[in-house]
Image (cartoon, rainbow, N blue to C red; front, top):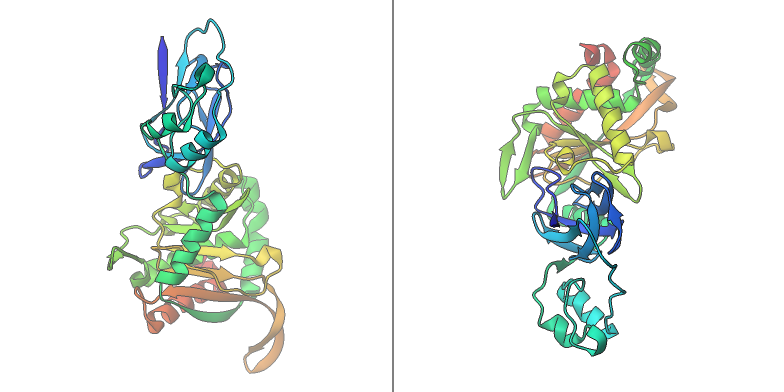
Amino acid sequence: MTHDIVMPQLGMTMTEGFVMQWLKKVGDLVEKGEPLFIVETDKVDMDVESPYKGYVSELVVEEKLTVAVGTVIARLSESMEEKPGKLRVSPRARRVAEELGVGLNGLAGTGEGGRIREVDVRGARPTAKAATAPARRRIAERLEESVRTVPQFYVRREVDASQLTLVREQLLPPIEKRDGVRLSFTDFLLRALALALRDVAGMNSVWRDGALEECGRIDVGFAAQSPGQLLVPVIRDAAGLSLSKLAQRRADLAARAKAGKLLSDEMQGGSATLSNLGAFGIDEFDAIINPPESCILAAGRIAPRPFVADGQLVARPTLKLTLTVDHRVADGVLAATFLNAVAKSIEQPATLLV
């Protein structure tokens, strides 16, 4: 008996996947639930487990090819009397197969000893389209598209963070003991960003298909590091979460991003994103919008700086914020109102605890 292995749908919006690497070769025994191959979607790489036990009888789709969800990519047999030998392919046939997106496994060769020739490849029906880029190039293409197609402008503020640092120090031990999560400045910033989206509703929108679309829920993304790429997990209903619950959700998403275990749906749907480089010693920077979102907030490090308070020049821990805004969604006044709302929450962090 033979079982077909198909490209799985790893998220509700996933339509195709990139076969990055086969973890088994033809003739290998695969246990049910054992990782069989690595698939790359638009934003994440994942190990895909075999739904059956059996021997790999055919790898229909070669590595580095993109196929639609539901496409047969491999076959397993319950028994194999002998393992197939090494696939014999002429160099020209292999090159043409890569250009046309034709899978070589299972293709009948008309050359001597079953050798696959160029004519065999050209006469075969393509089983997949060639992948256009690895993960890093895909990220670069999205950023290039953002810079090229989105009219972006910037508003900046330096914020007094003295109360924020004090509140975090006070809350850190009890929340870590009670909820098992360590509050980071990113959690406070995400909470401030979410509340600003709630209070300045015009920013909780996206520009999609040539029109402004209001978001019914406040979903906020944050930049998270993953091996070889930068991911943007999205926290759902961020304004409706307590600071502690938001921190737990952020920690879970960040851990799974680092492990490459995020689902495609967990990186879509946000209206705004936070990019915090404070932990890397950066004072301030400009971030690029993640389309179709309305804005991205760039936060630098909290550090002692000269600051005027009550007409006096003093040293205060301050935080420099830069908001990059899609001008199709908001004008300068709305962007300024929004950034001021974020700044107010940071300067009066008790509002983040309600």
